[in-house]
Amino acid sequence: MASPWDRDQLETFASVVAHQSFERAATAMNLTRGAVSQRIRALEESMAAVLLVRERPVLPTAAGEVLLRHVQALRLLEEATLQRLAPAQAAGRPVPLAVAVSADSLATWFGGALTALLAHPRIALELVIDDQDHTFGRLTRGEVVGCVSTAARPMTGFSAEPLGRMAYRCVAHPAFARRHFGGGLVPAALLSAPALMFDRRDTLQADFFRQLLGFVPELPVCHYVPSPQALLALIAQGFGFGLVPAMQAAPLLKAGTLVDLAPGRGIGVPLYWHRWQAEPELAAQVTALVLAQAARALEPLAPVPGRAAPPPG
View 1 (spheres, rainbow, N blue to C red):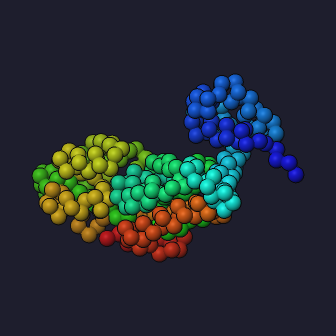
View 2: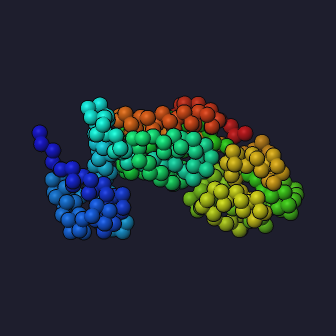
View 3: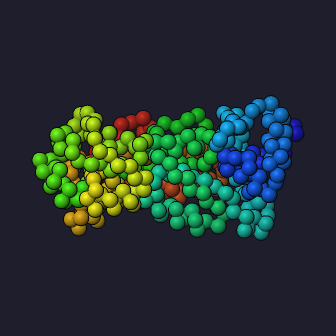
């Protein structure tokens, strides 16, 4: 049975999704805007389905997400076939692969996996940074071949592998802690203490206080700094208190630059690697590299989807 599309149409579709724009895709592919539109129209007609939401940014429809995953798989299968049948031709033709991780993971444990992926001769890596509660959508839309997520249960057609538990500590500069929390991390003290958070989607602090106090207090002053390194630096300079990865905080706590505001009462976030259930060989190599690095760097997590996370330490 003949395929209902051609490869040029598929690659044009993938480029529009990647650039979220017909114009930017046309520039990247050295085509006119009209040529890109014509290929997309022909593809949609052959599929009898609308594949793109033509707004700003341009996004795939549900049908488009399915097709985008097909394009990703097709690229990987072609690469695997070339490696077996024409390795000389495959050499020097790395396959574009995207994975999604959170900024905290990138700043801490994911670094070892990143260097291995960058050194892989068959991969042209795109690293997508998103909140670990939201990376999962990138995978289901077909934007990435794998993602680090807090979701334990995979969607149909995907698998979730337990990575481990990422520990966080609530910390502050010693002078800041004396000024605001001389009596401990109690609700009354929070009324005057500026807090530092990653961004408005960050629920970590709410989860921490719900666990510590039994409720989420109102924080009258909250600064948002979407960079793990900058967030840690500002806390260490005394501009506020906040939750940071234990791996980042450890040397500063040891040096006395920071103090733990709730010793022994940090919070742990369980992390999972979501991937395609039927992985092409190159994507499986990515999974193996990520799982190996997580095993070295993260606290163990029971590999039972849906099971409650271990008690925070």
